[in-house]
Length: 84
Image (tube, rainbow, N blue to C red; front, side, top):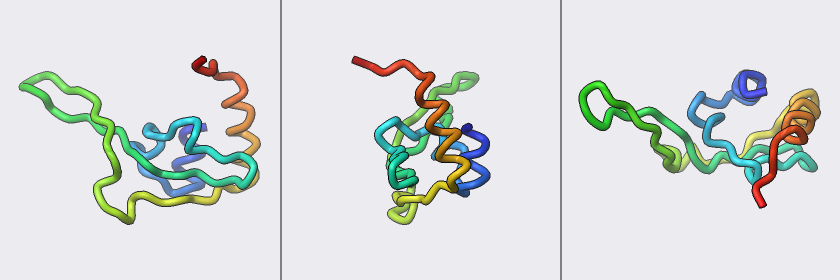
């Protein structure tokens, strides 16, 4: 589903990794890009993940999902645990 999302919605890898359940609106078929995940060097030979807002204002946006992605996303999300 991540690869389909990147390809069909034109998202960068970090934007796909930054999606949260609340960013996915299956009713209207829209993804809201609010953050991105990237790898950063914290010291020589050691990397860490950084979660941050997109680098530019244009990076925060809403993206329409094609119908075949909406159904694939619905199936995928149904199989994930929900935090209580």
